[in-house]
Image 1 (cartoon, rainbow, N blue to C red):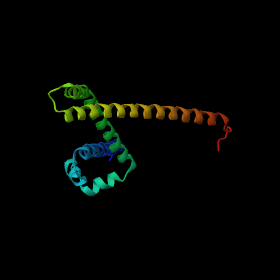
Image 2: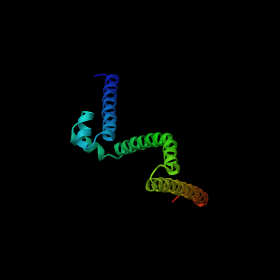
Image 3: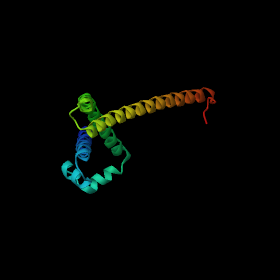
Image 4: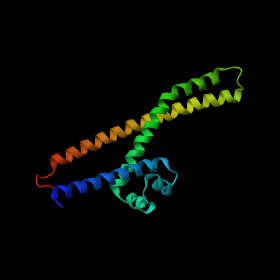
Length: 148
Protein backbone atom coordinates (compact mmCIF):
# COMPACT_ATOMS: atom_id res chain seq x y z
CA UNK A 1 0.00 0.00 0.00
CA UNK A 2 1.38 3.41 -0.94
CA UNK A 3 1.91 6.04 1.73
CA UNK A 4 -0.78 8.28 0.19
CA UNK A 5 -3.29 5.41 0.16
CA UNK A 6 -2.44 4.65 3.80
CA UNK A 7 -2.96 8.30 4.77
CA UNK A 8 -6.31 8.33 2.92
CA UNK A 9 -7.38 5.11 4.66
CA UNK A 10 -6.53 6.57 8.08
CA UNK A 11 -8.37 9.78 7.19
CA UNK A 12 -11.41 7.78 6.05
CA UNK A 13 -11.40 5.83 9.32
CA UNK A 14 -11.06 9.04 11.32
CA UNK A 15 -13.85 10.68 9.33
CA UNK A 16 -16.07 7.61 9.82
CA UNK A 17 -15.29 7.58 13.54
CA UNK A 18 -16.06 11.30 13.83
CA UNK A 19 -19.36 10.67 12.03
CA UNK A 20 -20.23 7.87 14.43
CA UNK A 21 -19.25 10.01 17.40
CA UNK A 22 -21.27 12.93 16.05
CA UNK A 23 -24.31 10.64 15.71
CA UNK A 24 -23.71 9.42 19.25
CA UNK A 25 -23.58 12.97 20.63
CA UNK A 26 -26.85 13.80 18.86
CA UNK A 27 -28.43 10.58 20.11
CA UNK A 28 -27.33 11.27 23.69
CA UNK A 29 -29.28 14.53 23.59
CA UNK A 30 -32.42 12.83 22.31
CA UNK A 31 -32.46 9.38 23.88
CA UNK A 32 -33.62 8.64 27.42
CA UNK A 33 -30.85 6.09 28.09
CA UNK A 34 -27.30 5.36 27.01
CA UNK A 35 -28.43 2.02 25.56
CA UNK A 36 -31.05 3.77 23.42
CA UNK A 37 -28.56 6.47 22.38
CA UNK A 38 -26.10 3.77 21.33
CA UNK A 39 -28.80 2.02 19.31
CA UNK A 40 -29.76 5.29 17.58
CA UNK A 41 -26.09 6.05 16.83
CA UNK A 42 -25.47 2.58 15.44
CA UNK A 43 -22.83 1.63 18.02
CA UNK A 44 -22.77 -0.78 20.92
CA UNK A 45 -23.57 0.36 24.44
CA UNK A 46 -20.06 -0.68 25.43
CA UNK A 47 -18.52 1.54 22.74
CA UNK A 48 -20.64 4.51 23.76
CA UNK A 49 -19.73 4.05 27.43
CA UNK A 50 -16.05 3.85 26.46
CA UNK A 51 -16.40 7.08 24.49
CA UNK A 52 -18.14 8.70 27.45
CA UNK A 53 -15.04 7.98 29.53
CA UNK A 54 -12.90 10.06 27.15
CA UNK A 55 -12.46 13.75 28.09
CA UNK A 56 -12.56 14.86 24.43
CA UNK A 57 -15.89 13.09 23.86
CA UNK A 58 -17.26 14.44 27.15
CA UNK A 59 -16.35 17.93 25.94
CA UNK A 60 -18.24 17.33 22.66
CA UNK A 61 -21.31 16.19 24.60
CA UNK A 62 -21.12 19.22 26.93
CA UNK A 63 -20.76 21.54 23.94
CA UNK A 64 -23.80 19.98 22.26
CA UNK A 65 -25.79 20.26 25.50
CA UNK A 66 -24.79 23.90 25.83
CA UNK A 67 -25.89 24.61 22.27
CA UNK A 68 -29.22 22.78 22.79
CA UNK A 69 -29.90 24.66 26.01
CA UNK A 70 -29.02 27.94 24.30
CA UNK A 71 -31.45 27.18 21.50
CA UNK A 72 -34.18 26.32 24.02
CA UNK A 73 -33.47 29.53 25.94
CA UNK A 74 -33.79 31.57 22.74
CA UNK A 75 -37.14 29.92 21.98
CA UNK A 76 -38.34 30.60 25.52
CA UNK A 77 -37.22 34.21 25.30
CA UNK A 78 -39.18 34.63 22.07
CA UNK A 79 -42.32 33.32 23.75
CA UNK A 80 -41.86 34.96 27.13
CA UNK A 81 -43.50 38.24 26.18
CA UNK A 82 -46.72 36.38 25.33
CA UNK A 83 -46.59 34.50 28.62
CA UNK A 84 -46.16 37.71 30.59
CA UNK A 85 -49.04 39.27 28.66
CA UNK A 86 -51.27 36.30 29.54
CA UNK A 87 -50.34 36.63 33.21
CA UNK A 88 -51.02 40.37 33.02
CA UNK A 89 -54.47 39.78 31.46
CA UNK A 90 -55.36 37.23 34.14
CA UNK A 91 -54.12 39.52 36.88
CA UNK A 92 -56.25 42.42 35.66
CA UNK A 93 -59.38 40.56 34.56
CA UNK A 94 -62.11 41.14 37.18
CA UNK A 95 -64.03 38.08 35.92
CA UNK A 96 -61.15 35.77 36.84
CA UNK A 97 -61.36 34.30 40.36
CA UNK A 98 -59.25 36.22 42.91
CA UNK A 99 -57.05 33.19 43.65
CA UNK A 100 -56.04 32.94 39.97
CA UNK A 101 -55.34 36.68 39.84
CA UNK A 102 -53.14 36.41 42.93
CA UNK A 103 -51.25 33.45 41.43
CA UNK A 104 -50.69 35.44 38.23
CA UNK A 105 -49.40 38.44 40.19
CA UNK A 106 -47.12 36.18 42.24
CA UNK A 107 -45.79 34.52 39.09
CA UNK A 108 -44.93 37.92 37.62
CA UNK A 109 -43.17 39.01 40.82
CA UNK A 110 -41.29 35.73 41.09
CA UNK A 111 -40.08 35.98 37.49
CA UNK A 112 -38.93 39.56 37.99
CA UNK A 113 -37.02 38.57 41.11
CA UNK A 114 -35.35 35.65 39.33
CA UNK A 115 -34.35 37.82 36.40
CA UNK A 116 -32.89 40.40 38.77
CA UNK A 117 -31.02 37.72 40.70
CA UNK A 118 -29.54 36.27 37.51
CA UNK A 119 -28.52 39.73 36.30
CA UNK A 120 -26.79 40.46 39.62
CA UNK A 121 -24.99 37.12 39.60
CA UNK A 122 -23.84 37.69 36.02
CA UNK A 123 -22.52 41.15 36.92
CA UNK A 124 -20.66 39.81 39.94
CA UNK A 125 -19.21 36.92 37.92
CA UNK A 126 -18.01 39.30 35.21
CA UNK A 127 -16.37 41.50 37.86
CA UNK A 128 -14.64 38.46 39.39
CA UNK A 129 -13.44 37.29 35.99
CA UNK A 130 -12.01 40.76 35.24
CA UNK A 131 -10.29 40.87 38.64
CA UNK A 132 -8.82 37.41 38.07
CA UNK A 133 -7.46 38.42 34.67
CA UNK A 134 -5.94 41.57 36.16
CA UNK A 135 -4.34 39.52 38.94
CA UNK A 136 -2.95 37.02 36.43
CA UNK A 137 -1.56 39.86 34.30
CA UNK A 138 0.03 41.44 37.38
CA UNK A 139 1.63 38.12 38.37
CA UNK A 140 3.04 37.67 34.86
CA UNK A 141 4.69 41.07 35.02
CA UNK A 142 6.51 40.28 38.30
CA UNK A 143 7.59 36.69 37.52
CA UNK A 144 11.28 36.18 36.77
CA UNK A 145 12.10 35.77 33.07
CA UNK A 146 12.85 32.05 33.51
CA UNK A 147 9.49 31.31 35.13
CA UNK A 148 9.12 28.89 38.00
